[in-house]
Length: 273
Image 1 (cartoon, one colour):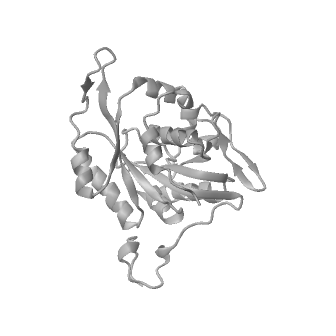
Image 2 (spheres, helix red, strand yellow):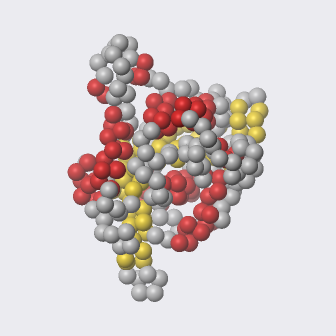
Image 3 (cartoon, rainbow, N blue to C red):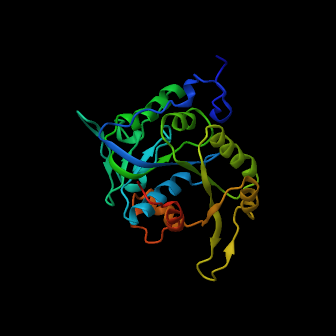
């Protein structure tokens, strides 16, 4: 058999093992929909988007979970003010639960100290992500959001191959390299036969609290044109909001009354079987 290109959509091999490498979820888990949140580069607020989207979906009455796949830079526990260690039972690892009922599993919950660095090679990191799916007792979950590390490396490949991902959201910012970065992320998803649900632009503008005028701090966006070229919907263009960043750092994201991802959650929400 020829070497696998990881492009299942064009694979002609009848015995290609990459066709279905999905790992079984924990026996005590029932997860209806999995959405991965990706970015082509770091520093675009991907984790804030993931956490805010999870909060918005929970406010719509759904059972929500977050799998923190950003192993070397986990931040989900910080956003929700979770500092305890994860516990294990005979049924598997127990996820932490936020005040709003969102279940979370992150490497931060397993290390002795929150500031311990993760100095592991790619295959080990990818293995941990798979274990978060197979070894965590998630229970009943309507929507699981996977916070991915930036780029198109080992972890995204592992998630796309091992988890039943229903679609991805691509988070970006209004910068010159947006076209190339977004296109790379979209093409990887397409090569792995994973649907791209749409694009979310973060840091699109700052709205002056005094005069109400919007300022394009990072330059004027051209993402709408790029979305049209790629045939994808531009789901939201989010403002720079210092209060949101402060709430994230203070572990009080669920307490923020204004959620800029409410409309995106509404667009993603669909009848669950």
